[in-house]
Amino acid sequence: MQHFTWSPKEKQLARKVFERAAAAEEQELLERFKTKAVGLKNLEDLWALQFAIRESEREYQQKYDYRYSQLIVVFARLVREERISMDDLRGLSEDKLKCVEGLAAL
Amino acid sequence: MQHFTWSPKEKQLARKVFERAAAAEEQELLERFKTKAVGLKNLEDLWALQFAIRESEREYQQKYDYRYSQLIVVFARLVREERISMDDLRGLSEDKLKCVEGLAAL
Image 1 (cartoon, chains in turn blue, yellow):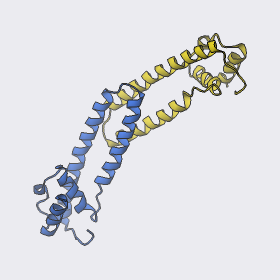
Image 2 (cartoon, one colour):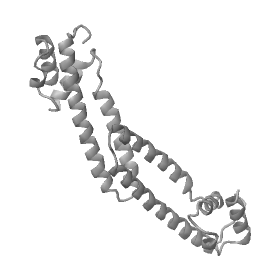
Image 3 (cartoon, helix red, strand yellow):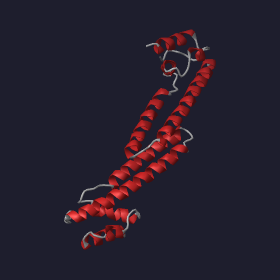
Image 4 (cartoon, chains in turn cyan, yellow):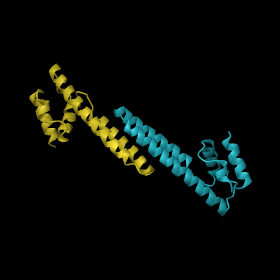
């Protein structure tokens, strides 16, 4: 993915789409874990919660990797997870869009 | 601590005191983390919560170690933390009580 170059306008768009998806997932995670915490019955639940948060942290850090060398893969994953749509990415070059779409469909 | 022997009656008492303290701390931990979860504002808070649970788990596992070789130390710690009182342990042999009291005062 290193061969793509990003124009200032593309970078601006990419940043916006990325930040919006990250913020939405942040809220989702906070809500999910608040709800889980309410239902804690015993220490096993609490230890399991800890493990679940750790897994979510790993996944989140891996998913939201804002490096231009990774961004196509990141966007493809977000499209696959329906966190963003191809429409959100309109404004990126055709070759990038094709690449995102192709990877998303894998 | 390995030189103490525990009579069946002492074991019964020890088990009861131990279980009661463990159950009380379980409730305390559940309440503490439920309250913390309510106040989650962002992902940094969530990752910090994970770390705090992990620390509590380590501490809890270390504290509630029901081996007769460890029990004097365990009770001394619980007395020091005011989770149990020396009164709760009445029924254990004098030498054990002295040892618990001495360690608790360290």
